[in-house]
Image 1 (cartoon, rainbow, N blue to C red):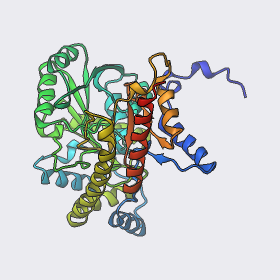
Image 2 (cartoon, rainbow, N blue to C red; image 1 turned 90 degrees about the vertical axis):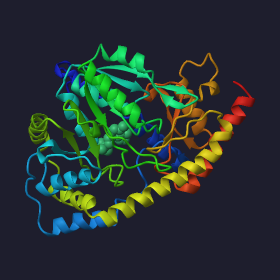
Image 3 (cartoon, rainbow, N blue to C red; image 1 turned 120 degrees about the vertical axis):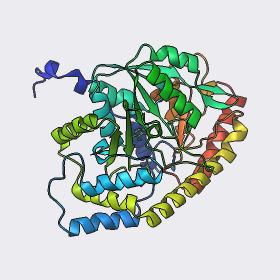
Image 4 (spheres, helix red, strand yellow; image 1 turned 45 degrees about the horizontal axis):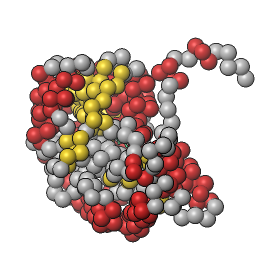
Length: 401
Ligand SMILES: Cc1ncc(COP(=O)(O)O)c(C=O)c1O
């Protein structure tokens, strides 16, 4: 077939990436085919099914024959459920301030698409889908400010943030944070909101892990600050172990923004499948089932985190303990000799050779680090994987390359 028309393709398509996480997972599958047993720390996808009461609601909706076009912007029952759910947290929203979308990814694509071509600032490290997919697709120019590791944990320098905000149109905020597991405090979140207001910078707040929290830590949503120029993107993917049952929603205090998002979502997808919206309306409004599920989800993930922590922390003085999401992000730069050019490939191979799959930090904008996800391993696998990981660190340090 001739490729003579390829040069005419738009770069917002030709520059799209395919996640390195997928490539690493394929390599893991290949290795397992040769009889190896690999600890899968690479995936950010929970190894549970969506809770039964939500699956039942999906089937019931199908049983009622709810298979017509969905209402643009979201089915009334879904929108009402989202409204009631946030009201429980003390956040009052109008229905016109909520739009149903196909998960966080579509929500972010719409949010950045509204500001196509503008300059955005975000903290580094960051979620790789932004630079691989969302920013090329929306032709957004991305600038980063490094998060800093201090004795008080991971934080940012407010003066440097303020300087950087003067040069951009938008700020991308993500808490709980992928890949560090940091949950930004209320003071930090409020300060970011204030600095953005001061410099006329709009906020896109990506909060997919809002329910994945440990040690009783509270998540502060940007919604709380009632900023008209903030767009908050939320998803069912993580809270309901439902990455394949795609739905989420976008909230903006300015209803005109939501009206535009409704039309954009209608233009490109004609809306999230009606039975999926019905299922999530039940997921959010059946408080007893919802709270029991979220409590057990957090307990299981906290157990995995603690087992990993017990194995990893002796090998890493200063390792940061995640308070949310399901990731550790340790610095292992010292495991590659200074002359190693491709640190990411070196670290990937080093751990894979020892039956542990991780994602190298360059993918997140921070070479020398690796992301360990405890989303897809059982507690026992997390413990064994932590042991193996720490063993690689100890043996490589005592026998430098
Ligand atoms: C930081 C961040 N934002 C957004 C998403 C999007 O999630 P989804 O599109 O599955 O709702 C993810 C998923 O891993 C994520 O880590």
